[in-house]
Length: 458
Image (cartoon, rainbow, N blue to C red; front, side):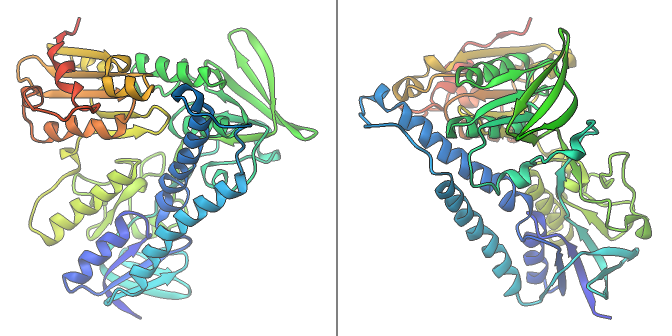
């Protein structure tokens, strides 16, 4: 029986980085990957989707060339096979890099197969049983499929299979009006598909403030995307070459037919086939592995990192999980999940950058607060680039002057948000940004101007 100091299950964002740190610290490590090195982000998430978003942006701007005084003769055509080839090349670069780095890492043994627990500190893979004092679970998540009548009888796409297609759906139906669904919606509309988004809730991206939801719905509809909210899909069926969704709304029941169906209604952890019960590792009702503030599971010597622990659903939270585990184990530097500030982006165009609390959460908190908003059309950089959709919003604590949260929906909002996020981590007052001299012409330079307009939150 091979013995290791540590076993890592899954080669997503946390696993490979931790393997390198452990090996550097003199540990003998085994890492197990059952499918694609790099995990969701590299293979079916951030990397392929943002590559597609970039291609779609170019197509969109080419059609807008006349707005900038640039003449393009003829129509703008999208070669989907070329788009897919570019996506594949970008993904392969990162996936192959992760795989190569692990297979050439001295002190690290790589197993390609499905790992299952057979006991608390023992894992079976490819007919062998591996044992270690420390085990780290980094198995990610996958698309959750809702129990819609007829769905099991029609072909449908998920985020994983969507990035594999090299053709243009004539009419893409998307179930789910949140982050994954909306990014694909705008991307494929810009490629040339007719797109319908069907959302069960009263508005898109329900975890955001209502003004953000309305603004996003507005610019998507301007591009010709059919947005249906308050719409429950009660059945799907094949009709010739089409897929028809039966939709229930306050006005009754109607039918929407499309050529392809994308299911983007949530995620579920890849924990159901790991044999966690054999090891006594506790999960919650949704299958997420229960962890404490330092990512330790219910079994001593076993940690869970990344999407499978339910403490974050992003590449950056998974990477931060690695940093927390490594700091506590190897650096004598206590770090905790509760220390991090909520931050993420929605990669529509324009993008949404978010940090900290929403306005709704601040109101619910009940403490005196200040708020300021600014339309992107008032930001010179956005006006010069003729990309003026969206707005910036910031909320601060009236007494401590610390920033509570911000939402930047607009040009470069996914980058500009870090100006606010870094000050929040420093626990510094908002006056630090207000007094900073920013570079002109940028979007960031208008954050001090935004802050000058803070008013009491009514």
